[in-house]
Image (cartoon, rainbow, N blue to C red; front, side, top):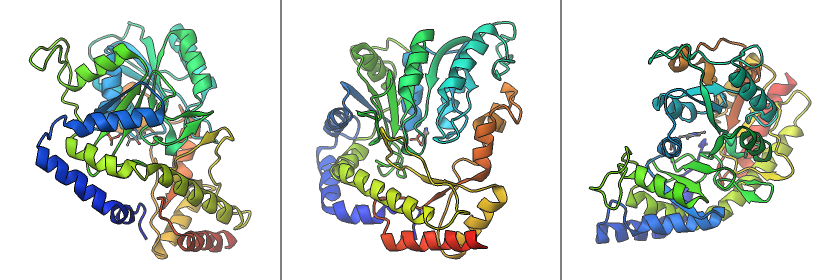
Length: 397
Ligand SMILES: *Cc1c(COP(=O)(O)O)cnc(C)c1O
């Protein structure tokens, strides 16, 4: 059994994939070819925003978004520690400081009430209100207060964070919001689409994401004309009127034409795949909830949201219970994974921020007992029944 089955999808769209790839080989515009604009237009329309800017990865999308706001040393960006390293890595890469805010225990997304506390704590320079990072790293700024600049909520496992609450808090404090939608392209929040929920949204086309290509790729989304123009400039080395007129420091952040061509073929069946993912998730939850009181906790999706199920994650009772369940599944030939085993505030890469265990207890608890089951649009009911059966056998012991 595959954790993510990309082969079935490829077989479905093989003819279109081949045709799209051959078209690129024939026109030869490997860099910024016509497929890029075509894909940007289609995805912007799907999401319901004015501008989409294709880029080289989800990480570059986040980096470009922060660069578009001129983020740098002395700036504080609030984000969740229960995410992939890239979310906070880009903050540090620009010399800014991540301020980690713990998650809601039910949705695993950033807790808006704690976000409000963290902003107050930072403004008051008072870590008794909310844990704050050290920032006496180079350059020597130990006596300089950090300036709150923005928030990066993450739509973890494909479920949008609570943007009504987050955007209101951000507006009150004059902060921008960048939606890390790397896992949530195709999801919905209160009648709006993921990637349309903040000032700029960033998604990833890494092969394992809900809409993945056959390599690296990503995209920024925004309704703001001037911000879109800035992102387009940053994407190509800070270009001005042409690429040899450079008006700012940028990056080589372009999406490959070939990857755009592949995404065009995949996007044609994407809406159907979102439905198939939701059907598979509903089947899992029904099968697992019916498998006894000792079974792991199934995901909660608020009534006004729709997840795109980048992951289907369960909470075991504790670390030993998780290990027992995962071992049992492994013995039955069923792959599982842990997203994420170590929250970012405890990662060695962020040791200089001085966070100690206990700073984000909900994230630490989730990291100790969460695990994910195989999830993709082509998961058969038969396979899901056997997975639930294995979980049940364990629960009965
Ligand atoms: C995958 C992912 C990224 C990074 O995307 P890449 O395309 O791999 O660079 C960023 N944030 C989150 C939450 C992700 O899951």
